[in-house]
Length: 365
Image (cartoon, rainbow, N blue to C red; front, side):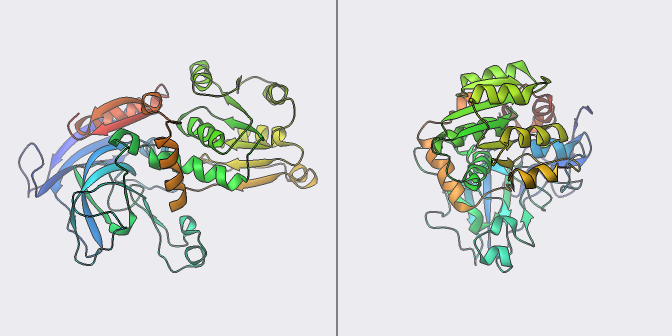
């Protein structure tokens, strides 16, 4: 693994060591393994945009993949940070934020930036917009910054009973919520989650919230399997075991109704389909880093449903907040490291190593 290094650069317009009201620091992934904290003028605010001061931002698996040049849809250089909470500092003249959002509001960002006019957008599926841009993933702005600009309509007000560390989990929890919703009614059903990383743990929580009867999780790392048990899985299985499919089915006492693949590599896809035979559903949640093949004759003959799951919709954000407010996902279980923005490169190293669940950055630590 390439070890990221931090470089701090200053534009000609700013010379101080800390960001003033007219400047900012932000993280830039310049090349694989090269993480920069740059100081530059604060962004110009578009008429439909908001200026937000970051209070906490999380690192996602997609961030670490992109930082090593392994994300299929994020080209370098890019400005990371889509799991972000902040305070609104200003609104553009034509900005139309959601109800409850004004200057001074605590907000999180729904980072999908749909066009609003294509077929998916006009049929309630704006998360798969044909012209989709994504804040913090290839867009000109990202949330790993003292302050950032974003389309005001993509802000979401944070309830008073959620603190900032809870709120920064809304975005990463919304992806599992969306995947679980796509799987259909889970009441009384058996579920398998492949991969006990951050997303896998949150998928398990979302599945429980939707009424799953039994949850089995797999991972190649013993420490992750132990954590999965502590956080609510009924059973865990070593993903590297040659008979992993048989062990999972034995723990369930039957085939899996739904398998959530949070890894999305060739062995996990094959295992997921085998666990779901016959008539089960496989939901692909992880982002594949390359091509994966499926045994199509088996999928057809044994009526296996394969469902892709991409990001989330507004209702998923709402449900994620419900789960957090109910205490079903606790920050002390998920946020395992906090660093200042100036140590972004160290944060990427921690997040890439696999020992942490969720690493977050704070403006000053």
